[in-house]
Length: 287
Image 1 (cartoon, rainbow, N blue to C red):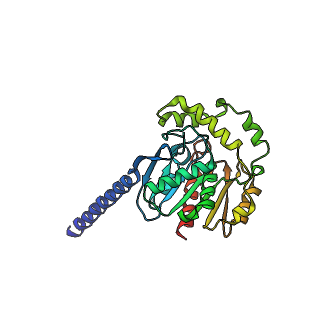
Image 2 (cartoon, one colour):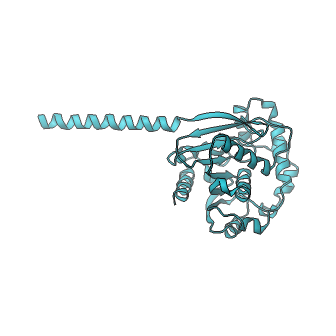
Image 3 (spheres, rainbow, N blue to C red):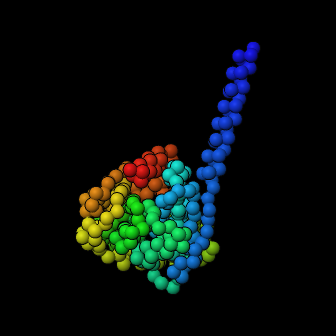
């Protein structure tokens, strides 16, 4: 009887401990700090999860918000340490200014935000247009980058699939995926600004000019280059980028543009790809 009572006591205490641990993990996953920083004429929105000495900064794709680009992968990245997700000019909760969008300005804004947060060194992951911004930072401000992760990046116009720019020239707001519109309208303070953001995004990409091979060879920070096998970036182009950046690692995963991240327009129900991608990212950062 005493043995049985002891066993049940141990089981009960173990269950309590597991429950408390689960609640604590749940709280830490949900815990986030949100804020705005006055940088370069913008009121720039950001979110911070967790803690750590070298944060991982997440830069979304064109027309996107933190949620639409990273909502499905954030839970799997939560074990890394400190995460900082940002929203760029005119996107989501961040204000706009009377200037066109450009990858150079986006890079300056991200750097200004990090300085505002008193962060001297960061890992940076950018997706699509955000990856072009990340590449810009790695080339022009390597002192602030610990490691860079380029997801669906391009460095030359012919890196995009055939007909990409011709289609973009004909694009209207009706061409924008409904899920991205809904994502914007869910968080933006001024829903009427959606069309302005869309037109600035299109103009930014249409104005895209080629980088040189030597610029990629000049990247000194450890870099992980990722893309999908049915991306809007040609696979050959992704491979070429990884070959040009000294010591870069390359990962090609199945899916469309954004599928590995679980991006809202490309996520597949029940897919393990966001979990796999997060594991690859964390492994790269911890090497």
